[in-house]
Image 1 (cartoon, rainbow, N blue to C red):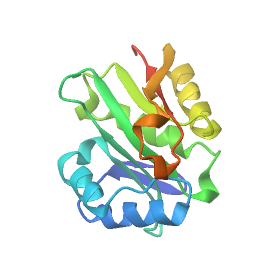
Image 2 (image 1 turned 180 degrees about the vertical axis):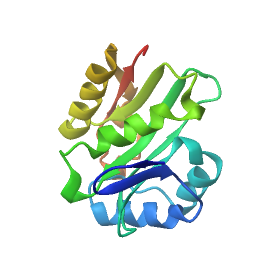
Image 3 (image 1 turned 30 degrees about the horizontal axis):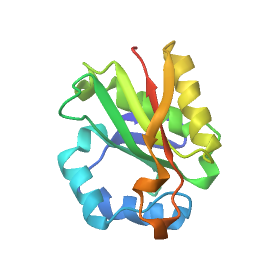
Image 4 (image 1 turned 120 degrees about the vertical axis):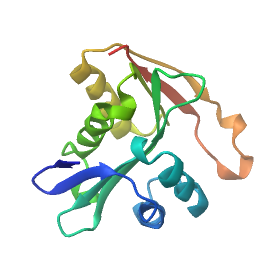
Amino acid sequence: MSQYQDFILRPAVIEDAARMWQFVIDSKALDPNSPYCYLVLCHHFANTCVVADFVDGTMAGFIAGYRPPEAHDTVVVWQIGSAARHRGRGLGLAMLGELLRREDCREVSYLEATVTPSNTASRAMFTALARELKADYIQSTGFEASLFPKESNHEPERLFRIGPF
């Protein structure tokens, strides 16, 4: 657990799942997953999820992440979000740093995430992380728009792969 001026960073616990889901719904910027998905993430992947709580206990942000079974050197950031008042102020980078310092990421030398073309803030954050880590990054095809249900009007997701670091 890490303490910052306005917030505390810690691994997720099962009780965070409902809060994460509500945070996403309230954000109106993140793609919501099912409440069950957040339960599974907080239960099975707690140590690769980061929760940022304000000192008053309300959620400032979170990372939902996991290590793919076939890529032991990689951590995937499935979802990352920051409270509106902390966007652009380094909370995302702080949470990513916390994730990469954890024992569960000791063998990790790559970080992956998918980002839509319109999400300039996330692209800037992952580019800044690569700079901070003094690591290369590549962007490639992640998930084409045609793979999503037509009714979702989902943009394509570009894969960011940062590393080795």
